[in-house]
Image (cartoon, rainbow, N blue to C red; front, side, top):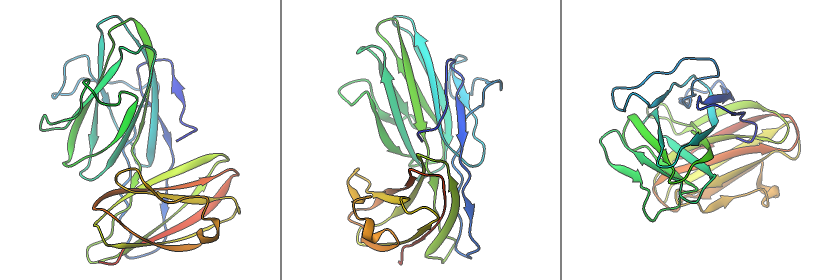
Length: 252
């Protein structure tokens, strides 16, 4: 999220963007976790070394940023709790080409390694609920910037096929959401906003754009065929401050 503050300390700070639900029986949106705010205490988790920074989450937050510096050969580990099917987006601004990051699932499965993968970041789906460990390493003394985004999950109530949210966007900002779907399903998005330049984007599990701001004539209501099974990202963006309402329907 573009307005997330960046701190000059290794303590993560959250930029809270709460999305309130409209009155619909199918709403079951799960709030994304939010990291420890400036001035709060941190502690090591049992799953990491004593130097790990535990990232505690508060309802409504979707993004956090941190700046840090590592000595040559140094490393810093962050521990964050995710729910199954949540989407985690990592962006690492490297102060040295020797800097890498790893991401490990609760069961020890590596989701990203420091060998041969894009070290600038990536998007990862939590397959199980639990504590995920993200470690930044540096071969040379250098600073780094780390940005984490966990879009708010849009989930349906048992037996339901639709959910709706509404929110307030500051100027030049966005609200990220995510939802899980199967290949062949059709997603219908109904969208309205108080400002005409407010738009929504839909991105597939592989990062392919399925709906963008170039389809302005279809911003009000559109049905999209979903090409693959997995987690989709749905973003609401606006250049001007706006209020909006968004409804998502995915028939079984």
